[in-house]
Image (cartoon, rainbow, N blue to C red; front, side, top):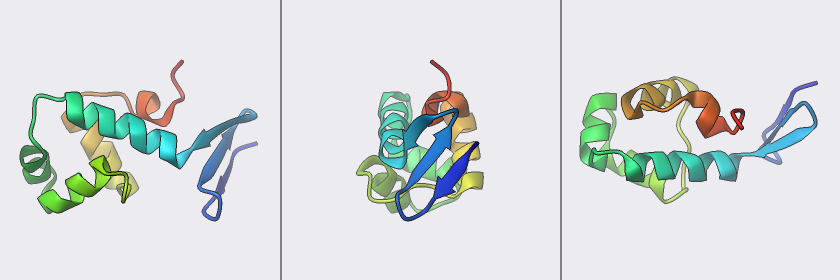
Length: 86
């Protein structure tokens, strides 16, 4: 059974706990290793560059639609960022 708990920021997938902080870390790494600046990423997403900076600093995580577009822009699988691909 899959559960999402906003209080604990965890998602249970087949008895494997996926933590939001781990998702954020993988997303940060994908942003840092991309060949784009945070400003370029923000322009493509049509968001403020400071928002991308907050993703990198782990201060904020993107809305689901922004997350999907960010994965597309970074050419990275959402499963990989979510930790579902092992």
